[in-house]
Amino acid sequence: EPYVANELADLSHLPLYAFDPEEAKTQLSRVVDLIICMGGDGTILHVSSMFDQIERLNRDDPTAFGDFPPVLAFSMGSLSFLSSFNVQDFKRAIAMAFKGGFYCTNRGRLHVCKIGKDLDQQHFQVINEVTFHRSSGGQPITFDFWVDDTFLTSSTGDGLIVGTATGSTGYSLSCGGSMVHPSLDTILLTPICPRSLSFRPLLMPSDVSITVCVAESSRYQGIMSLDGHNNIPLEKGEIVVVRKSPFSVPTINREDNIVDWVEDINYQPKWNQRMIPFKPVVDRSES
Image 1: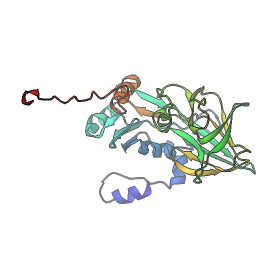
Image 2 (image 1 turned 90 degrees about the vertical axis):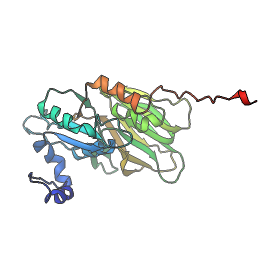
Image 3 (image 1 turned 90 degrees about the horizontal axis):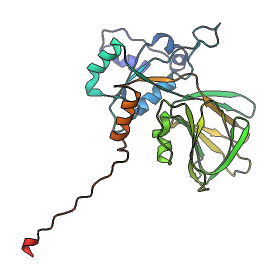
Image 4 (image 1 turned 180 degrees about the horizontal axis):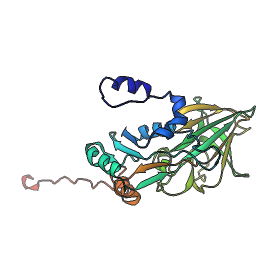
């Protein structure tokens, strides 16, 4: 990023390349071979947004896309599911990455297309989720949902999450969704505080498209959030189509995608672990 390059220009003897943020979205996949992330999960979400318009490398072949470089992620936050390595182990991890022969978890993303009233389109990529929720007014909102061309349901409440398997340990988990292994090809539908108690989270196959709009019966407009950022107003008459993206994010594993995930859900949220209450010992010798 330009401001980072400017800060480091006088401190490093290595060549530094800076890109305009918009230009980077189509050019980074041509020049970047490895991404090193230092921070928390938000850092990886930011990296994902920088590669949201990966350019076709061969314009004569519509199936030839630019690759998303492997991501070597170091955890420096308090809770991190996407960063496999502790920052204190950076020497071994970087040596392993340059040596090759490592395993990756290909984390699927979602392609989000917002179609306006005048049929103009906006395109986005998310690695965790796209969230449809009520505006700041605080009142419930009603959304209509379709799976492919089949009407699914109308939902009244605070909103709904359309997420990836990777995003299952984020906002979706807080809303009662299941934890899903990131290698599974699926799309999550998780309601946020629904009025109906029978509206439970769903797992859909990844080859379907999910269409969302603010219901005509809704009193209020909605908001669409992308990986927790970019709050975009969603008005009646506008629709959003969500489907699987062809661009996954390969994150480098410590061991492999099973061992890392099992260890992380036990270490991070302490899944199925319970605190054993301390029972005070009463000294009865004095009574």
